[in-house]
Image 1 (cartoon, helix red, strand yellow):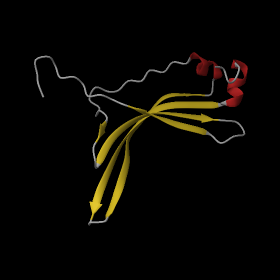
Image 2 (tube, one colour):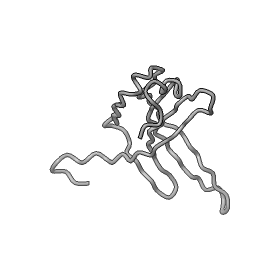
Image 3 (cartoon, helix red, strand yellow):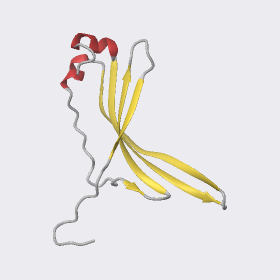
Length: 115
């Protein structure tokens, strides 16, 4: 489905950014009835940032997760979450900002080793 023709793409999105973000969330209990949630962005990596509509139309971005990076993790009181973030500046409209959750699986153990 085409929403905008190629010649109108740069008018609709004068600037487009795509990145990845990883964050850590931790819930801390304070007493019997109160708790607080701490959210910290661990890393934000820019994957694409351009104002050139011809680059938008190519439609390819390489997403590399470093081999030493922590995998996705969700527990009762804390979690590590990865996201692909898309930010578009739109002429005469509020900017668009969307995050897509990404599940990063743990690396497999080398053959012959067990957990």
